[in-house]
Image 1 (cartoon, rainbow, N blue to C red):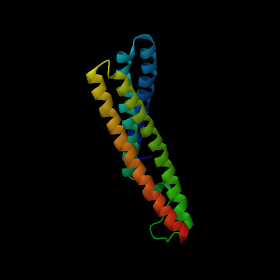
Image 2: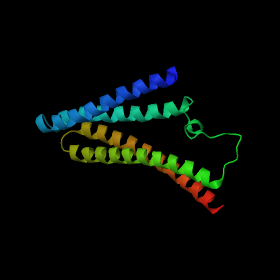
Image 3: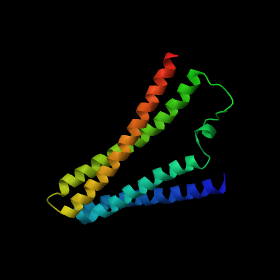
Amino acid sequence: MTETSTKLRRREILWSSVAVGAFSVTGWAYSNIGFIQSFFPLLIGIFALRRILALEMAEGAEGNDLSEQYEIDPDREYTADEQIEVLSEVKGTYGQKGRIWGALTGISAIIAAVAIPLSVALTAVCTAVAGYCLVRYVRIRRIRRTLDTRIETLSRE
C-alpha cells in the first residue's frame, strides 16, 4: 500500500465512523429530544457519507484505478466476454452507490415535506440536500445506462 492510499484509507475510516455515529445519534435524538434537534446529526451523517464516496473516487484517481483492480493489460486485446465481465462488475459498484443516493434523496425529501409546518429554514435545507442527492443519483444512473449500452453492444458481437 502506498502512503497516499494509506492516508485515503484512514480518512475513509474516519468518515465512516462519523457517519455511523451521526446516524446513531439521529435516532436517539429523534426519540428523546425531538424532530428539529435530530435533524443536525442526520445532515452530518449525510455529509460524512458523501465524503466516504468522494474518497472512494479519489482512491481510484490515485492509481488504484480499474485497470489495476481488474489486472487489465493495455497491450492485450480483450474478448467481448472479458469486457462484459469487467463492465458488469463496475456497473454493480455504481448500482450500489445509486441505491445509497436514491435512499438519501427520498429521506431528505420526506423530511423536507414533514418540516414544512415546523420551519421554513429546515425545509430549505432538506430540499437542498434532497436536490444534491438527486443530482448524484441521476449522474450514477446515466453512467449505468452508458455501461448497459456498452455491455449490450459487446454481447451482440
